[in-house]
Length: 455
Ligand code: F0G
Image 1 (cartoon, rainbow, N blue to C red):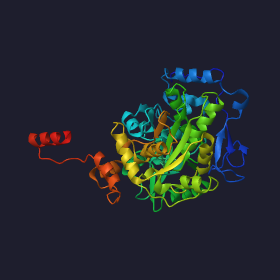
Image 2: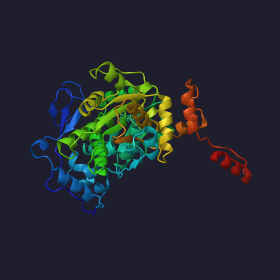
Image 3: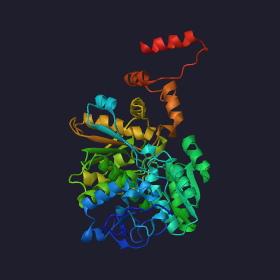
């Protein structure tokens, strides 16, 4: 017998519909590519009954708190704990869960000093079961894939989505097909997909090429598409913001800063903020800012050069391979979020990413390179006066340090970015480098090393 679960009194399981973000068309079913049948724009999930009888804010908050005392699988999930704002399940045991979510919110005292922003926090999504924020979305989307009767799920990925999808497919008794760009994802992420039993294809193209192919595949073969084009993914990823606000006792921070790749996560967090405002869970909107690597800056260019009206895609190149994306699928959703929250869109260099990653690591928490763009971006936003020293800021760290050990090793050995011609930047990086030291196995050698390190 599973332990009893806790439901919010008077709140119905959420009946949902698909809404096109372009023409607003509402439908009960979605095509396999999750695009509008009328205008080909992306779909989002909407809950029409919230308008007449939205769940009460106090009831929801009390119920979410109460569920933390429960031992049932669905309540132990930091995603399904917020299920009143997710597409409804008929039975709680339908959820495929690895106890995702429940990630910590850390303070960052050293980075706070560096940036001059004392109230600086990190929401560490890298501490999810497969080591990235993708798990929050995958638990929901994989669940609905299985409910829809699919045997196969598939995704294109820069690594983390594939690791997460493969794990949830395995847990849910489904097969998974992974399309990744050959040579451009970390071994750590690739090895996860293999371990979880995915059929893993390394395609001779980039992420954008993999995603294009997947979109064609799902129209031809009975495979369920689990990229963040899938709106169920974004519903799960919304819970990052719900959990964050709960951790802050529902006092919104002034700024939330996220890395931008395919732009699903910024879209999901933005949707959560708008829904929280509409449901009176918060009284004020944080500004959501999106940071990209300079070499993969499609949203930055779209925002600056085309006023967010048409996508300017780029040929992406960055060592932060998780966000090596030039043709982001959810760019329109992300533009809507920037407009609705008043957030900024910035880009950072490879040197700035490497430096920020080492600075976060020096706090004892660590993250993967793509996550570090948030701290690098914050430094720029402070300089520009967009973030003020008295304001509070939450950085969303999307992946674990262990996701890309090669980057970290190359950085500390001085092999990463060694051709940089900016001497000041190189000097700043050198200060952070702690290469491993090979010594004779003598007490004297170790003592000498200790003395030198103390200087
Ligand atoms: N950070 C990490 C660690 C990621 O893996 C990704 C995306 C992002 C940030 C960007 O998030 O795409 O929602 O804007 N990784 C995807 C993948 C694309 O396939 O794992 P986004």
